[in-house]
Image (cartoon, rainbow, N blue to C red; front, side, top):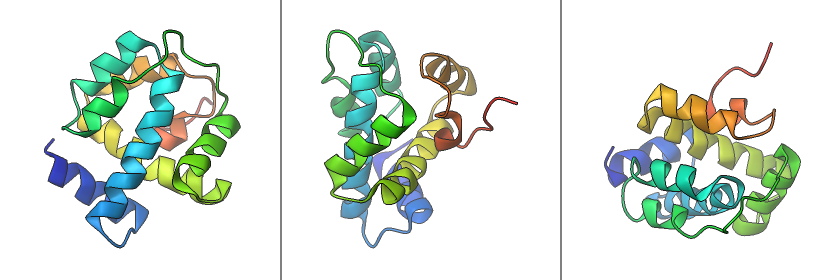
Length: 128
């Protein structure tokens, strides 16, 4: 998926005013996600995303942090300057677009690395 297409999808889903806002939100969400997943998983995901969004995923800690959903959203809110409820909207707009940009098996593998509660952010149903 090309950057312009990715950002257009995020912009539509998040109802953002501009492509710049969609890019800022995308970068912020991916930056927090990169702290939560393994470096290998981040690199695999980066290979599927357009530049410069892929670069955000290459800046990751040696070991992923154990962030539950609420802490993940708090950090997204911190990155974007939004409230937690808005951060949930932002994360959903970006991560559901990520789920459309990468093969389903990779999304499933990524979700298997995350604690319960992340699936809906990727536009997937949660566990039954």
